Length: 229
Length: 248
Image (tube, rainbow over all chains, first blue to last red; front, side):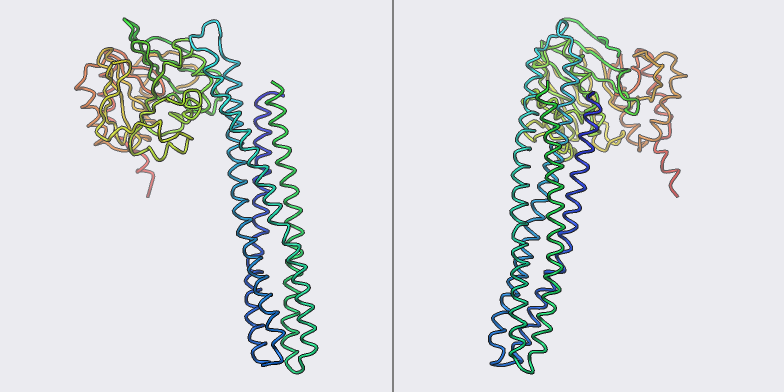
């Protein structure tokens, strides 16, 4: 495969990675209103518990858990977005370093060793710098993808926790007499939000798998070219 | 590819390379200059990423590139210095003389601040192998932070983008031939890229203070002998800043 085609192919693969990062980021943004709604819901739940007086004591404990659930979703979003930004920067640096690597290959093809006053070692140093950069950035990228995976994994646990809280709220609603109507409304809303969170979580995990696959492909192609020479 | 010595006497030389036929056609052709004095080298506007391999391969025949101690960047454009990070990868100690106002911009090319030597607005001098070269302000022609470079020993004046022309691929000469005909390939470039008549007049006066035998631009052919004054007179009479006329 000629260097130009390789270079173009690497560019296309970087575009794929970039698009996947954007998609993942977009999906994460969809969680922002969800987290806000959870906070709003927890405020409503606190009001309902207060109106119920002593009959709302057990439900009040649940409202704190709903609020914590919202906080955890918010933290997860902001941490994940930071790592996505890192991944985009690293992928961009890799694309640039790789382009430099191709430039050095072109240079070595052009060198007229018999006429040269410059030692080829002079250029080898530049090429080595680029290869080291590529290796470092690839390692960093693998670590960032691992971190992304770690950050997104707890979302599934949060969904389970939300479902459990919704069930507990329904149980409280059933035993709270006339105040049970407002408790049940909170439980229903929570079920709805947690359902959305579950759907989003599944979508994000699928996008993350695609992103990891694309990065793996890009890295493999780089290795193939660099070690084949 | 054309490569020539513009001057080569007693351990002092100027080498130019240009008219790179192998470049991608959508990339503007550029002239690169190498000054050597006592075995030390200075590169003038070494070009974009696209031309790095051609420039490095060619100049490696004329000097041990490890002896090139500095790069002069007349201004910040990509065709002038986007190759900087590649030059610094091969020589981490390379000094980069750049207009002060562009320092925080050219770091976007991947250059570290330790390599940069800012040139103040009033200009100054650059020393290579013990030989002093004058750095002459050329602000707003076309870049707001822009310099020319004069070598009193050779009487060669590097003018950067001033005096540049957009030549067809058929024009293979390194020097200007028929000056009258040649102005056709310079006029649009100067009227459109140069924004200020006042800056133009001031720069022309600066050049005329010096004894100039060759005026060497970054694009196009080199002016030699009488063509230097012909160019200055032609430029003096040209009304620049043409894009203003197309804005309502």
